[in-house]
Length: 267
Picture 1: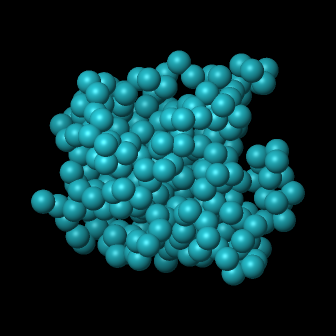
Picture 2: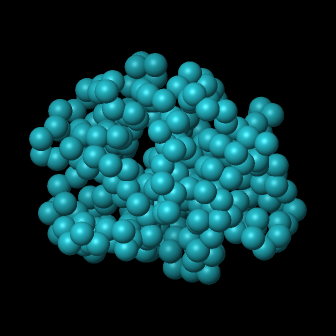
C-alpha cells in the first residue's frame, strides 16, 4: 500500500475543476515518491473524489450574519477540518453513512494543499520531515509586532493552513475539540487560520525558544512564500514575484483582488 497521500478540498464555485486537475498534475510532476491523491468535494466528478459530509452546512454565513458584515462566508475553508476526521474515526471506528467515502482514503502520511498554490520543487521534502509534531505554514512575511498587537481582533494571523503535513492520528485532538465546541467556534472565528492560531499555535513562544511547546511545528523560513505578500519580513517582501528557488508559492490574498484568474495566468 502507498503510504503517502496528498489531499485537497474543492467546495462551491470559487475554483473550477481545472484547479484540481492542475494541482494533481503539479504533484505528479514534482513528487519523486509514490503518492495517493484525493479531492474532498461537495460534488463527485472523478474517481479520486471523496464526498464531503454536509453536517456543517447549517453554519454557512453564521459569522457574517451575527456580526452584521457583508464579507463572504469562510465556511468553505473550515471544511478542511473534515480531513482531520481521518484520524478520529480511524481511532474510534465511528464512521456513519454520511462519511462512508472517507473509509476509502488510503495512506498514513498526509500532505494537504489549497487549490491556489504553485509547486516549484520536489514534494519528497515534506514527506521526509521529522513527524514528532504536525506541520503548518507560518507566514514569515508577517510583521509579528502587528500579529501580536492584533491578536485579540484576529487580524494578521501568522498561521496559514494552505499547506498542512501530518501523520494519521496526530490531529485527533483538533477534530474532537472542533466537534465539541462547534457552535461557539464557527461564530467566534471568521477563518480556520484564526481558530488554529488561537488554540493550536503559540506565537508568543517564538522569541523565547519554546516554539516546540506549540501543538504545530511550522515550516522553516523560505520554504513557502506568498505571491501577494512576500517571503520573509522585512528582508524579502517584493510582491507578485515568483521565487523558483523556494518550494511552494501561495496565492493567499484579500478578497478584493482577482487572485483566481491571476494564478491561472501563471500556470
